[in-house]
Picture (cartoon, rainbow, N blue to C red):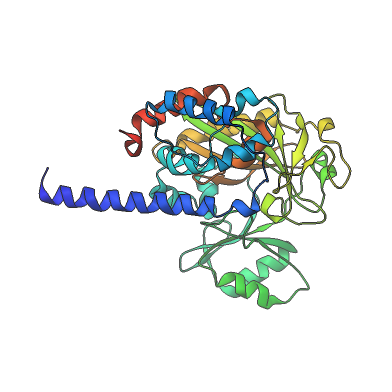
Length: 365
């Protein structure tokens, strides 16, 4: 290896390690906002350690037991607890391994969804920007005056940052009659989309009509096949306009037949059999659920050289047709999936983890 190659490798390794430390710090810093779990017994800790030693081939501990205490609070079958993947390990080694973080950040851009997925339905974009110029729905340059006029014609719009945001952060709303200075402040953002408000299927509207309630699906491309490994419904609550758990919403697991699980949770881990607005979760069947799954599986291979692990957000429209809201190419989240549905990779857990330990250079001994 030449001196130049050695220097490049050293710089690359340093960058990777710094990224991992940042990821670990980020997700461990959120402990106070997370579920208050249940302390582990010595027998449980022993079983978990033995399982991971078998998977990794080493006694080194790659995770914090704190996350197992969270899942111990919601896991109905204690024999399954060892199959949960702790958040710190998931983000530092699993998500980081399956998703090229550098390219994910470049390609994960809401302004480009219609180009990535032209054959499916999207929220109707009014104005977008990903650089210097304002663009219309056809990617044509427009000026500020026309952008304002288009928003007036739409009546009510939603503003979304186009890149590097999560948890519904900085999503805003505007309607005709409100101050135009709000629109002008939107236009100063470098990467954004402004879209017409969606109208959702009546089944989802009955749960909570003030927010668009979305399906979050996690797909994994593994062994030449794409699978939906976990899916949940995210719901707004108490008049909130967004459905994110970090904004006060609820999340509930979706069974393979499209039925909701009988219990939903909020971001603190409080369990609900009924939505605060009244509906019983066990009575809800997600409309067009199989079609949503088929679309996610169909679209996932387009990013196979960038990421094999994608979190998709779909709405189901009034007509029952799926509408793609967002595709998270990395940092898609595992905590809410495991709280609602159990181990995120289900029966594939051991196979996936052994593959990661074998092929992730950060885990080679």
